Length: 584
Image 1 (cartoon, one colour):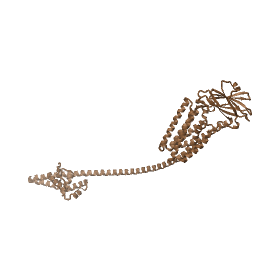
Image 2: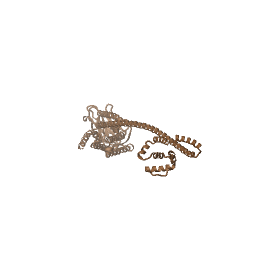
Image 3: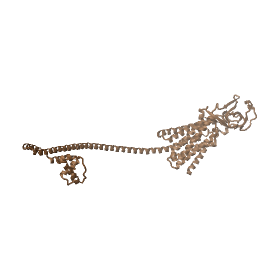
Image 4: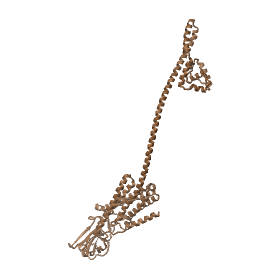
């Protein structure tokens, strides 16, 4: 833990070195033409009166007047040189220079009407070769929106060549920054479209915000939207709130949103670090609300950017340090790829934090501090890209695991499908077997029904036959009492019928055959359990099993119904069953 904070301190120290103060329009000290200056409050003087006025005082305090005249004494320079001077207060300034070739006073004016906001108070002039010269400046501070009527005269001089070189360097650095950010953006855009990783989306947000912020940092939007000044106030320098300031805030908001979202998504803080996740979310929400309120006031009411910028930068530092603290905790909890994220965050946050610190401690004018902003912008693009490479490896590993799991799942599904096919075949075989059994059962049922019909038919036939025999027997009795002739004739006929039809034993065997076809092994099982039963008792038991009534049994056995009841009672007692009333 101590090593982490030691590294953080060292990086912060290096970052502060990037934020060293640099004079605006700094040139070669040996070539500085300004020898002396003096100030005179304006009392409605004409320019001719100013030329001869002896009341100029060598001071830089401007107090009480609505306008001032400044007398500039230019030292002799070896060569005629073009210079640029920057004056503050810079609301409305006018430079007077005597041209020895035309013997006329040349003028140049700088106002919001003819100058970009960041070029207010700037004038070009040319020194005469080895000749001292005098310039006059008219400084108007009669502004409705002014903090007070006390100002400090600030003059900065540089050669036109140095100024042009500075602008060229800034242009080159800006283009380099945009080109590098665009390369990282396009590369990771392809990565995002491939994997749809929200962390990469937040990285792309950072690059978009960085592009907007870099462009506004060097006031490029002023060149494209020069007429969009919403409000201004004179605080020594004229503080304007224009489209450049608004887009700078938009860029910073997008960067903050991207940074916070990137860290929350990268470390899955909602699950792994819930407290810090809520803290980052609330800090971001407060910053967004603060920025919207301040921008609204600046646009529609009054310029307060000069007052709120310090708090804006402090809050940015707080958010950045909270992000770094979250990364440290992620690293301590050994979250996946947290080490790469911590390194990237600390490295680039050092440079990003150096910019607000530079604005807080040294200057809010960043035209010369272009290398620090470029390094900060490129470091975040590079370092977070490195962190994304580590995350990509993790995602690829996860994808490989998912691919293996998918292959295993596919194999399992194929195995399940194969087993289902086997089950379907088994079910088909079972259905076939069931159909066969059903067919066989139907055949058996048909055979059983046929046997039952044959049995019943045989039984009825036997009953009818025996009833006929009983009648014949009765006729025999009647014939015995007839005359001899009719008796002999009737006897002969009846004896023939008896010989042909009274075959009870043969009928019983035929009945038994049909009965066993319907009730297989019935007589064998009965004989096993009741071995003492006689043939007549077995026959009676079979008739009772068929649920024949006493009358039918009597006809089959050739006895009367009373004999059937007695035989039935003896049978039931013999096999151990209780007798009961039976219906006829």
